[in-house]
Length: 220
Length: 165
Image (cartoon, rainbow over all chains, first blue to last red; front, side, top):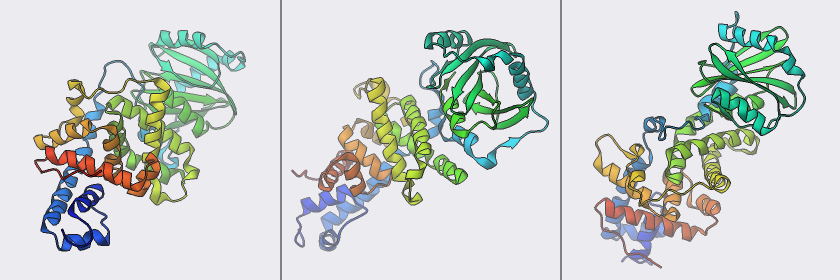
């Protein structure tokens, strides 16, 4: 024991916050070899604890369970959606964007739907396509459409800025956000885990907040 | 300002996933929690006045989203007597058996000890910040941290210190 504190209280202080010790503790340590050794051991242990807590995230990317879970949207997708400098408006449009536009144009009546569908009606369409989609936005149109050899949910949701078409493209890959425009439609293709989501509007650009909400609701 | 904030989220995401894992002890739940955290952080970004405080701010959001997820979905908690949880490959190191043992020991710490330890060591929160987040006094936090480290000393082959009331 050294100074006004006894060793047991000094060790509690060391064990509680070994990197931020007060002057009284320091004073005790200056005269107590046993507590100094305890501090040294604790700092070494803390280095190991830090290493232990820093788990190798590569192992996280292997799914723990086979059933489809909500894919990891996380920052990578947020970045793709959000970073202003990260996207490119491509001219000429990619084949995928052109086919999305063609498809939506041929189902022009979908924009006129107003009646909100029941969750069961939406679920039936999603089930046909084998996709899960949770959204609080009212869905006024839902079809499982043939698209590039697959059944694809084609939805129209009501938003504060008007109706938006959403196509959930489980079998398509896009590496980065891609904006496009054609025939009075503004759209964006977004990477979404193992697939992609296309969002189109007739009222200007697709707002980021809506894109994020839509993408985060998809599970393949 | 959209770009820098999103880049900040991207930079901190790995530690958020790690923290969520140490809370939930389940990789899939951890990913879900971080997904919700990033969305909430994005929506609340105006609340962050000091960018230097972003790390503790995000860690507290992870903690609250984790609690919210269990509240909302009534997920079963991970049973630490279940050998499969301790055999999770996420805990395995590259040939460092000591580190593997330490990870399993941290997994088996009671929540009341593991949570402040991870907040302090991984999150970089001060004991004052931890006390505020956990609704505890600072001495109570120090005691919990001391007890957490004391248990880990044994795993590490060190003599534990005498406990205090």
